[in-house]
Length: 282
Image 1: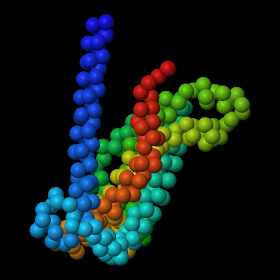
Image 2 (image 1 turned 180 degrees about the horizontal axis):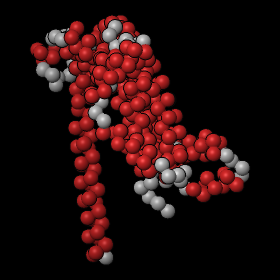
Image 3 (image 1 turned 30 degrees about the horizontal axis):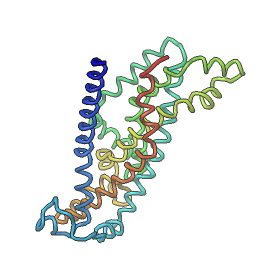
Image 4 (image 1 turned 30 degrees about the vertical axis):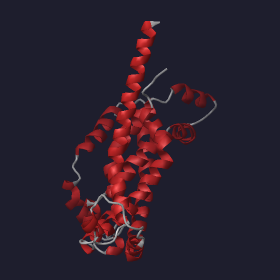
């Protein structure tokens, strides 16, 4: 009985310690966001006169109104179009490449997989000039369509690496049962493998979606006119336009961050499943 009480006390202490660490991590993580949102409602010089950590005197929506009427929606729609098309094509290409690498046995499987994984080590910045020349040669320069190709190309290696490992954990008994029922390889891919790989695809969608949403280098190099630029460049341009109006910059950052938060809330359950898939066998 004494041993049971000691174990129970240790368990309670461990849970309290873990809970305290979780609360601390939550506070540290949310403080920048809360700081950004609160200051976005302040007047232009209110941060300078009353401190950056004080609550706003009133909820000033003029910052958001001016940002939304100042061309923000144009940048936002460009980012949404590029992100949607790039993600859909990326997930389809990664799934088509991962399926044979994970489920088929052929001599070139390992060399092809190693070559794809090796592409993860290529720095993005050394490709800016070649990609810039290529976009000029194809007539895609200074358009949102010039961003889709590079976004997909640089996201394919990590996506294939993750999705191949995920598909390898799918039980082969399911595939064998489908083959007995007369299911072909293509039908198997669309009817069996893809539905079972939804958690992995959701993980890739969130991971690559955040990277594409925040990407700056290619967007800055391959676009020139303001009507073809994306949200990271909007932040850059708004910062130059409202350099002395910090609450306005905070409003721009808040509006830019909200779609990613909504996306994470919608797909958070699939993200957790995708990250923990294969951790437990049996």
